[in-house]
Structure formats: structure tokens, C-alpha cells
Image (cartoon, rainbow, N blue to C red; front, side):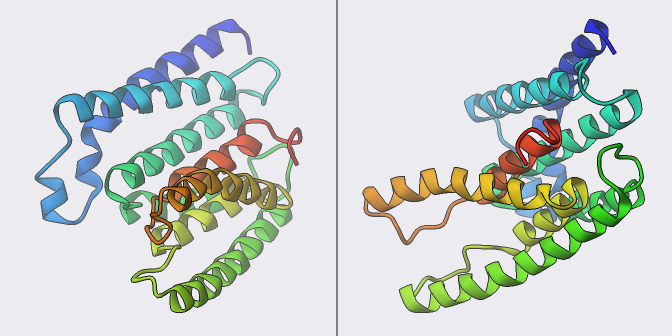
Length: 223
């Protein structure tokens, strides 16, 4: 894989991100969200941000020192999926099940495709992800009860996203990805606390996606 593949990854990322941001309202089940898509400056920012993120991921996925073409394209495709989920969570605090659930099925079906982790490691990643989800829910309910939050810090969509990351990263990379995601989410958490808004919740999915993309695009380097 040479420069052509890198350029192809970047260009496909720009095109996909630009158009996906304009169509993502179709992924929501709530009619109010589907019938009121982003427009104007907000849509332009969303298009530019998602196009830039997908272009970066596309170029990294198809870089010469990464995987062979098959696994590289799989990495690119799942990177785009994760970034779309991050975009919808940023916009509406929603991780659409119409994307996340099929992605879990496909990730499970392609567990054999990765050259650097076995199907057994992928299964272990799934088990760990499920355990983390249970632990997060238990901790979140405890914190919500003690601090009298009105909702849980970890939503159902976030839980599904963690399961998807477990299948994509396998063991032990899932722990690294989640660690990076938690650390990244700590930044807005600190900002909200300092500004006196510590009881407010923010979209957690984009930070989980960021944490997961690091070991997905740089396997073995950050584990």
C-alpha cells in the first residue's frame, strides 16, 4: 500500500464525513429529530468536523506501514462508523441503534479478519466490555443516588458502543481504549466542575470513540 491508498483514504473520508453529517438526522427514531436536521452554521461546522475526522482516520487506516488492504479497509469502515456515532452523540446525545447494533453483528462476524488478534482475543474483549458496562452502570447509579443526579452518567447507547469497541479492539486493547476515553472525558468533566456545572451530563460517546480509535488505528503501539 502506497501514497495512492493514503490519498484514497483521505478523499473517501472527506466525502463520507461531509455527506454523512447532512444525513445523520435520518438515523434518529424520534420524529422531532428526524424532521429538524441541523442547518446553517451548525450544519457547516458538523460537516467540516466530521469530514476532517474521517479524512484523518481514512489516511491513517490506509497508510503504508499499517495493515494489508483487506484489514485496512475494514479498519477504515469501522472508523467511519465510530465517528458517525460520535457525531450523533455530539448533536443529540443519541447513539442510534440502527447503526450500533448492525455494527456489532458485523464486527463479530469479522473477528477473524484481524492479523494481530485472534478470534479468542476478540471474544475476550467482548467479555471485558460487558463487565465494564455492568461496572459503569453500577457506579453510575451509586453516584447518581449520592449526588442526586436526575439521570445516569452512562446511557444505553454508551453501553452498546463499549460492546462494539470490545469486538473491534479485543483483549487487551479494549482496556487501553477505554482508559484513553475516560481520560479524554475527564477534560470536560473538570471544566464543568470548575464552572459550577458539575452536576450536568455531557455526551460521553465521542470520548469513548476517541479512546477506541487510538488502538484501532495504531495497533500494538499504545497497548
